[in-house]
Structure formats: structure tokens, C-alpha cells
Amino acid sequence: MNSERLKERVYYLDVIRVFALFCVVTIHVSATFWAPYKDEIDSVEWGICNFFDGFAHIGVPLFVMLSGAVTLGRGYTIKKCLSKILHYCIVLLVFSSIYTAVKYLRAGSFPGKARIIQDILTGDSAVHLWYLYMVIGLYAAIPFLDAIIEKPKLIDFFIILFMIFAVIEPFLSVVLTNISFKYADALKTVLERIISKMKFFFPLGYLGMSLIGYRLRYRKFSLNMRLLIYILGVMSLFLIVAGTKYISLKTESRNLVLEDNFSLPIVILSVSTFVFIRSVFEKRKISVQIVHHIAGGSFGIYLMHLFFIWILGDFRQELYSMFPHMILLIISFSVLIILLCFVLVLLLKKIPLIKIIIT
Image 1 (cartoon, helix red, strand yellow):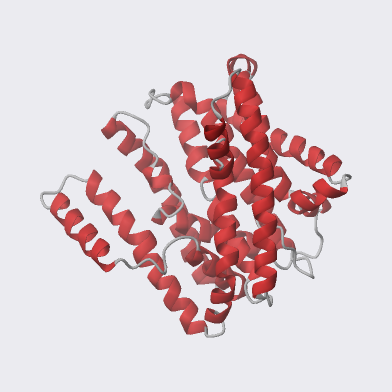
Image 2 (cartoon, one colour; image 1 turned 180 degrees about the vertical axis):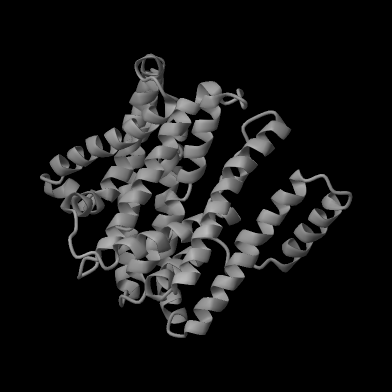
């Protein structure tokens, strides 16, 4: 959730930002309501939460792709990148400290100083703060990625390497682990040993996703190509939902291996969603201002939404009885939490120092 804004607002990028934010919040909302049903794999509630959780896992990949689309090729100097890194380090320290304090206040007890310091520095008190560490890494890599995008063929080559080593190879390992095939285990072992011996780390991680986002912003797609991308996206969503249930039934517990950010179907679905939103909104002349405003406050909303998720979890049982259907429950509270955080962000932005931190 890069807070860097374009000099000229591009409406479809704001739509992607808001949609990605909704997905991230939905992951945590569905996980909250899924918890009591995590072992009831054949239940309707499990299936609904599985669908929302599976689809919503495109949130982080979309944010990373969006980051590449709005930062790469924008003339970021090393000095500017270091300035952004320092900013995110301060944000991480502030919010990690707040979440750590709230976590132990809710628990009613405090561990030793060493554990508290550890939680603050690692961001372990809040599951979503890992994203800030990743963003720091992306900003450190921008000068190198900017050099790559000077030559389009290098972009494509890097993306190919990323897809092979960061996405396809791990996905094949998952497939070989979960299919009944005589030589599956042997093939998996050979594949993993070859990759481990190569120690080929350069195209791994989120750099490839960032370059994909840059490519998706500037590449033109024909109608037939878009239709193919959409079909692959729908097939990927089916694979995520059905595959997660299949593997969970096989392991007799909820297994989210297909919902990893680097899972092949997640990456394909993320690309499909990016292309679809761009296609629908790119030439739209009339924009909805609330989308711009929420997009502008998305970083602050992301930072603070987990507080409301924690409160939501405290009233989970009461909410089950109030809402007749799980679908309505998940959608309603995802939207509600975003709106509550948005209002809070607007209020906090009136305080200059806080505005600098959450912008």
C-alpha cells in the first residue's frame, strides 16, 4: 500500500487500491468468522468463508503490483528511496509499539522487557505489519528495478524468471504433494533439490510482482487476450476454492497452501483482476470521489483496521445470532470496518504529526 501518489490521478488505479484494501480487510474478517468452523470442512459456513478468504488473498499481490505501477520509472533517486525507507521504519516502530501495548493490555499481563522489545522490532503483535517490512525491501530495490525497466526485454526476462522460480516451482511442489501418483514424491524431491542447489534468489520475493504491475499498467491488451486472461482468472478462482477444500479434506484440517501470495492461481487471479479493473475504468470520464478519498487514506486504513478486527472477534458469537447469513456478515463488516477506519483517518489527519505518519 504505497502512499506515493501520481501527479495526475489515474482513476482505475484508485479503484484497484480500494478493491485491494477491501480484499485485505475481508481476509481478516472471514478468518475471524471462520475460526469456529475451521474443522467443519463440509459445512456451508466453512465453504462461504473458504470462498471469501480464497478470493480475497489477491489483496496483497494487487497492492504490490499497484506499487510497481505507480513508483517504477518515476525518477526515484537513491536519496528519495532512503527517505521513504526511513518513513516506513518510523511508521513500523510507532504502530508496532501501539499494537504490542494493546495486545498485552487486552491479555491483562505483560511479559519481560526483552519480549516486549522483540515484539516491537519484529512487528509480531499484529499479523498485517509484515507488509511494512516488505515495502521497505521494495523501496530498497527501486533503483535496480528502474535500471531494469530501461530495457523492456529485461522486464519480461525477469518476470519469466520470477514466474518459474517463485511461483510455478513452489506450485508444482504443492501439486506433487497432494496428488496420488507413483513417482510424485520422487519428482518433488528431485525438483526441490535442484532448486536448492542453484541458490537462485534474485528473482524471488515481491520484486517480480512489482514489475508485473508496471507491465500491466503500460501494456496494451487485445480483446482476445483480455478474454483469455479473464478465463484463466475464473479457472484460478475455482482451483483456489475447490483445491483448498480438497487439500483440507485430505489433511483433515484447514489447509491454505493454495492461498499463499505466490501461489500460481493467486498470481493469475491477481493479474486477471488488475486487467479487468483497468479495462472497465481506464477510459471512464466520470469518477466517484469517495473512491479517490478512500484510496488516499488506504495506508492509514490498512494500519488501523486490525484494531476493529480484534473488537469484532470479541463479539463474534453475538453477531452470528444477529445476521441470518455468513455472506451478509462478511461483506457487511468488511465494508463497515473500512468506513470506520476511513472516518478515523480523516480525523487523525487533522493532527499534523500523525498526518505525516499515516499518509
